[in-house]
Structure formats: structure tokens, C-alpha cells
Image (cartoon, rainbow, N blue to C red; front, side, top):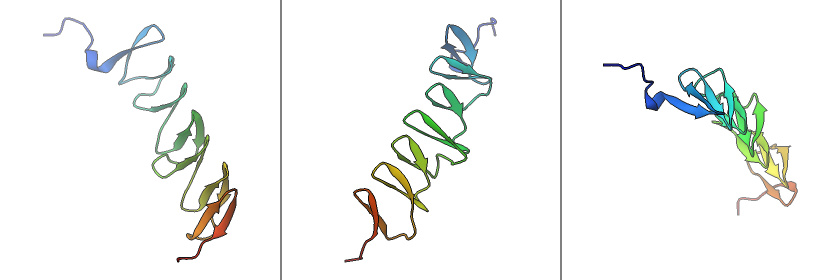
Length: 107
């Protein structure tokens, strides 16, 4: 029997408002009108479409395949984080040595 009281599991306080998590996403006190998103600071995003590194959002690169280089997301299949910079990886054997990419031997 429902008494008109919302289910505790689907409601959450955000910025002083009781919101339905099936209709909204709350990120650090900011209410977004789309449910079931992840938060990156105050921004809401879909992890299949974007990535978050140190509260910085990178659009167009899924978090499911990305790595972070400081606050920058990158694709480790064709990029490498080297000295805090994202650089193009020309070979799977490329490794970062300080701030330079080198081809490492298999020894």
C-alpha cells in the first residue's frame, strides 16, 4: 500500500531538492535532467561517449577504453602519456622515457 511517500532508493537530496534518480543526475550539487549518468565535477556525462580525468571532461573518447594523462584522456592503443603530454604512439613497442618516446628492445 502506497502512502504517497517516495521510495528512498530512487530519491536523493541534491542542492536542497529531493530528486528522482530515475529522472535526474546530481553532480556536486548540480541537477541534470538526464538520469543514470556519471559525474565529472559538476558535469554529467555518458561513459560510453566521454571520459573524465581529474574533473576535466574529454568528449568523444569513451571512458571504457581511455587512460588518463593528468587531466587529459587518451586512447592507449594509439597514444601514450609521456612527461604529462599525450603523444602519438607509432608502434606497440614505444615506451616513454622521461618526456621522449623511444622504441624499446625486447631484451
